[in-house]
Length: 298
Image (cartoon, rainbow, N blue to C red):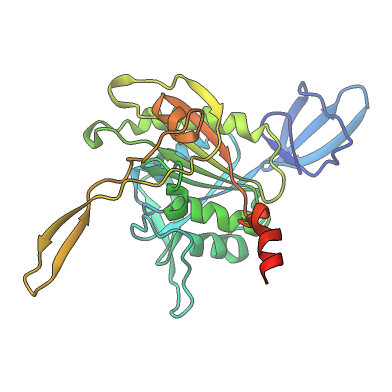
């Protein structure tokens, strides 16, 4: 699969070199006709189809922002959790039924709310609820997903589920500064620009990208956009501790975006420096450097 032109999804072979400048004519909803310069050949491609999901819930401001961010890029179909599912990672539901209901989000969109995890939404969306999905978009998460946070993230978990099924997926997150100053209008504009950039790139089947937008408080704008590797630094774990009325103690996490180290050039360092970061992630978590040592041991 390759991106053809600016917005349109095709199944052209890698050997075919399609020029950027094409003449586009929309002659029926959902169908785009492209003229290949010099070749004298017409091909018909449908508009790219997106499945949108998140982990903050279908009525979260980040979902509305993502829906607006994808405007003009293709057909948008929302299948998202009915309630907040933050930090549920790649959890799925096996031992109870899942209920999927129509959900109207004001006048912006009509989607499907699922009483399950983000990965459940992707499973149902791709297999039962939305036909012919080309790309899954997960977000916009209220909070950055950089470094080891991708392990905990339901936003990334949903995108990973899609990639496992062979569908390109993009997890999108906004670094939150002062929660009272979160600018979702600015976020959707910057995410739109980021999506335009990556959708024109090498989105092979199973591609998994993690995109983070820096803090946008008080009119701040990103310094730029860059590709950065994932930081492997552990988080600083901090909890507020108090006595429990029934004995023992109560603990409440009090630090979520503090890392023990900040590696130069990593996604954490670049995001904190004000860049939109793009990080390709892998599904294979095998450690190849240790394979021979364990083969020798066993």
